[in-house]
Amino acid sequence: MTFRPVDFFQSDASAARGQFLSICEDAGLDVWSKGEAGEDGYVIDVARIGSPDAASVLVLTSGVSEGEGLCASAVQCCALAGPVRRELPRDVGIVFVHTIAPCWKQMVPNSTCAVTERAWEDALLVAADSQYEEYVRGQKVAAERIEGSLEIRPDEDGVEGVVSSYLERAKRIGIIDIRTGPGEFGHCDVIACAERATPVGERAALWFGIRTDLGDISSSAVPSPLAQSLIESMPPAELAAVVMEFGTYSLKVMLGSAPGRMFYPENSEWQIQVWQKAHTVILQAMGAMERSSPPRPIDA
Image 1 (tube, rainbow, N blue to C red):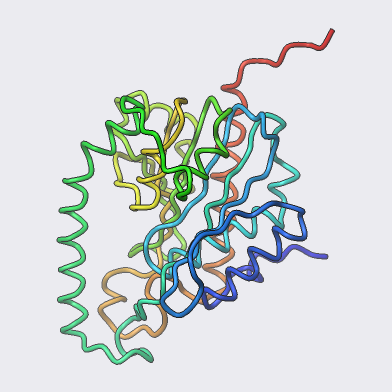
Image 2 (cartoon, helix red, strand yellow):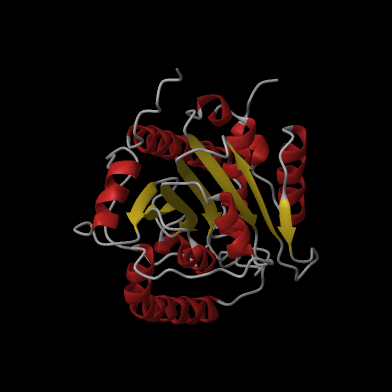
């Protein structure tokens, strides 16, 4: 069957989750789930590919909005159903943390959602102010946790504990937090979650690369609440985290009259660009993290 990335970009959370679970079942993967499905439900599903003894493990997760969850779901499903499983090095694994927040009905003005432009502008300003406050509060804590200076015992029954259990043997852990946001249509920014001058920032640059055709890797972004909680629960290992953000529409367009979901364009050109660039970032990370692994001993 021909691999078509656009087939994996679903329009709603239920279809996206069903697709993820179906792909995992077909691949014979165990899936751990927590939460309740439904209109206001929030379900997290976790699966892993690669050797359980892999020294390097990538973790793919998503931001906080419905659009980000749908985008991350598509990337994860493309990785599972497409070429990534064949390309996965022997000493690298991938953990998929699949979740989609309940629909917030975030739409561009003058679309099917009845939101006045004034209300939208106010909401945008509030969101920007809130995001900046979150950044200021979280920057110091995230930097300390990501450096591994705090050893936290996770709740073994919670998501953090489950993800941590998938990573117990890992020596290197790289987190990719998938986001969407205002920006050039289909453009990909890879943003480190620590300053470049720190060991964590250096690892992010080494593992995830600086590619002018993908966008800029710069310092620094605050991980989404889910990604940050996972960072806090990680076992002792070399750690690096990045936000991989895909541009959807410019602020000018968002405040104008373009119809559709503002953080999840249902457009095949955008979908193809998202997967192509996500695939490049994942390939870069797999290769760099494999090269960071010491050679395996030769069997006698």
